[in-house]
Image (cartoon, rainbow, N blue to C red; front, side):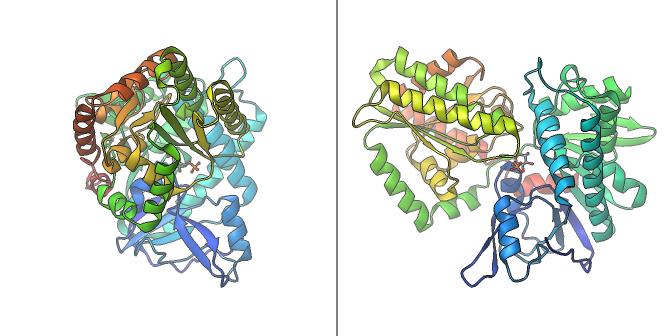
Length: 486
Ligand code: G6P
């Protein structure tokens, strides 16, 4: 699927992430068009992509992307200057089988599961010879990134490597380019040592040592940074200075930092002012009528805890029947990682439970749960504007930007029901209603409290939530990462 352009100019600032800021489609005239990609990382980084002299190296293609690329006359995926701004984007062409093992098996079915503590442990994980082969592909995939970065970087350039897909890249680069200053940033939680130790010992060490090849290792919350430092102590017997939050790697000092990420208020408000959002808003208002609206917006992602969220809504309708016919639960659960069997099964359980609730409580003029699975960014923004209650109840989440974006766009004020296990609870804990994500009854009661909140209080809280949500805009978050490299 395309050739790699090796004539890229050398860049002073490089960003590396599995998923890039764009996805592709083919226009009527057959030319390739780029659209903003999904997920927290892309939301965070897109707003900084416009800077000149930045090279963004990425690899992920969705099925739709592959199709679009193969249908386009250019038939190639490397390009420069797409419409997010001036940054150049370089897609690395990784063989499909290598990519599948690195992305689906190692990154998403193993590292993601470890950091979000998602395993059903009587059955998984299971590390056998097959896994070792997949691990080799994860290494090869990391090596392809390291190669692209080493070749694309100017003397003394700063490199910001993102997320669990690319844990080995910093160390792979350091040996070859000691002049570079390298940051690694995790958008996920980090597993505590008691959970991380499930990984084969040599692989666990390789991951930690890979990241410690960086000069600076960053996390979204103090909780995740502490877990990482504890893993370094436990599995590498590394010398950790807890006052300075540094790790001594044989005389080279690696700093571990906490950089929260907030919503991009300006970008969001500008996008939400567009006509297509107004149209969606009108349609949603029509559908909801004078009922209260409980909203959730997620990828269909195991860690997002959608099933327990629906169970809580069901319990609300049982325990607080006064809400029947007076509330609509709009659940946006957008497709994600469909190649991982657990995600397909999970998508099915979400659909089934939504249907059960509708069968149990629905009437001729009331559908209790409206489940939408087709990704529509404009509709998500419109729903933030009109929601009365926003439910964000992940099992574990690096940050969760939905919890921050909702209050920023809310027009009448929305109450936020938020899991204590999301990094966002660090910033929003004061004005959100915090819940234990496993406690369905507590979540049901929190929904009731949120629905019953007096309008004035809901508005005041929402204003404070929005203020806290934008305190660390993506531009500053990214600048902090680079500053930490000086
Ligand atoms: C999270 C991860 C990102 C990832 C995103 C979407 O936010 O931290 O690295 O890009 O999820 O997941 P996907 O597998 O579709 O890229």
